[in-house]
Length: 190
Image (cartoon, rainbow, N blue to C red; front, side, top):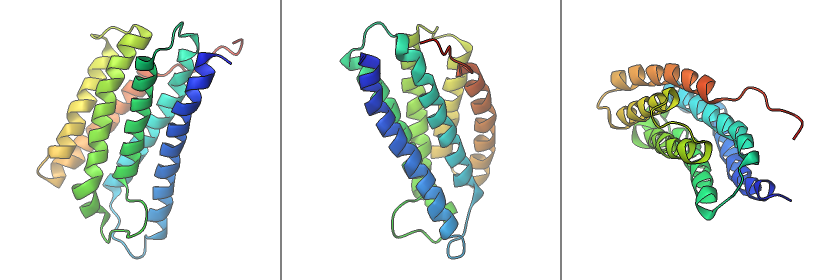
């Protein structure tokens, strides 16, 4: 068993829990649709978080060729997975005591999931530079910096209208950054 195979299990475990938590929250929202006032904004952020989760999981395969694994490398990747777990666990409510209004929930608690995504982008930039040798001044990192700033605007914006505009702009940038960051096929000869 290689270091990649061994350590990627822990990272995948946290990512699997993150995806499960988010999908369970979506299921809970569906079940509460008659009792709670729904709001599209947290659902859009849930879709963004799911896109980040899948893209990170897919990108892990690039690390199969990493010549050396260190505690710092493992900690960095586990921290990224944990941030995605937090983001998915916060943008939509989970557990018992479902809120009566998803818009109010997002304003009070869900937006902190967006803060976790901002942290993910900052830490992801560090990971791209240290693990993949990417240039700090590359296009992807400018997109990630813009996503971080927009995410923080959503967290600290005073009004809903600003949150909506910033959320939609974030989605456009997310589309570009995922296309830029994703390897769309891996060689099956490994």
